[in-house]
Image 1: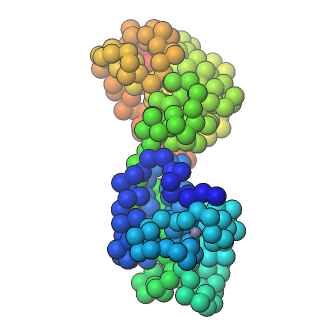
Image 2 (image 1 turned 180 degrees about the horizontal axis):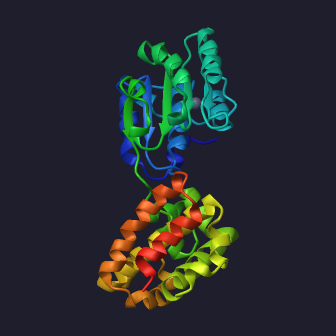
Image 3 (image 1 turned 90 degrees about the vertical axis):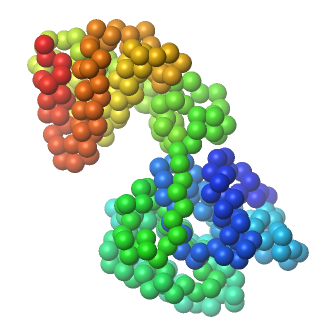
Length: 323
Ligand SMILES: [Zn+2]
């Protein structure tokens, strides 16, 4: 048995606001949960569904904003077997019209006044046809139906969807919260994870640790080797776009650390275990390091687009590291 909401770490303001709205019988029928990936938005949405679907007959008005955690309905939500909760994820690269049509068909069947909750995960990937099909239902919702649309930045949602929904913004988790969710990992991993649980998993996996070491080696090589352009080793590592992005992502934290180490206390650095190697980059002027940090942001945007991955690293070298 479990009350899903009480097991969630962080997001207390958002949770209290949702509970208050339920207790006051003012919960909007269309909600957007926006914020960074992998911080627990879907967990909050599922826990919210459990509260709405709970059928504890002894509920007093006061208890409306809690799930009992033990009734059949609560248990089915927990096991993802509830007939009153549908979680829709992208089919391939998008949430498609067929998926929305299935949901509208499902909602057209009577449910004898019980609450139903529809969660669209990565709802910003809903294609325009699918979104347009959903608009009317969002506008005139059935009193027992609640939609939760989950996605990153609110700007990624279609305006027509936004204007019919109430937006609840979520923030990245703190280092302490990450530590409670996944204890006993290296300190650097918590600070480099940017408040995201999957990022923490990725960084501490065998592949993640290897990639981090590789990133630091390439960075050292980048700043010290006059023949960097003709060397082939690093090119193999950045050939794959996803690896190139991860390497660049690590570089961003490492370069930030070099700047921090130059200007303030060691305790603020993210890659604490690598401070000795990072200090070797001190010879580079603060101004150059700072410009390079800005250039990495642009390089990340280029990598996210169609830019040639090797060429992006080569131009960075030519611009910043060639003496
Ligand atoms: Zn219950």
